[in-house]
Length: 78
Image (tube, rainbow, N blue to C red; front, side, top):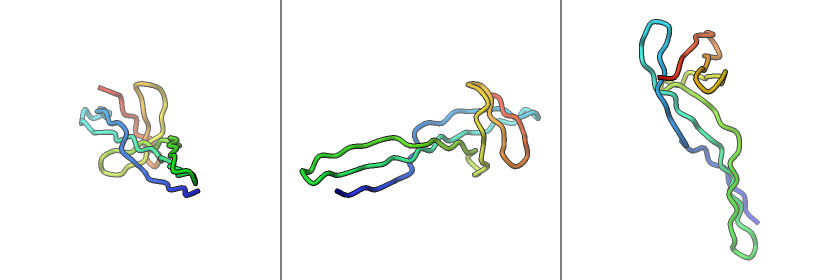
């Protein structure tokens, strides 16, 4: 059995900050792939991370709101 982990871009959406600027949020997910001895493969999605396109880490607040981890800046989905 062999297990590998990759981080993949699974979604993205646009948000607006309090100054009216538009930003892209990238949704990254850890994918866990296991190849069994018989050759069959299993893929399981792990945790998702939200980051602005510039790398700023975000916390999910609700379906329309995210918040920057370091600055507490609020971003609203467009």
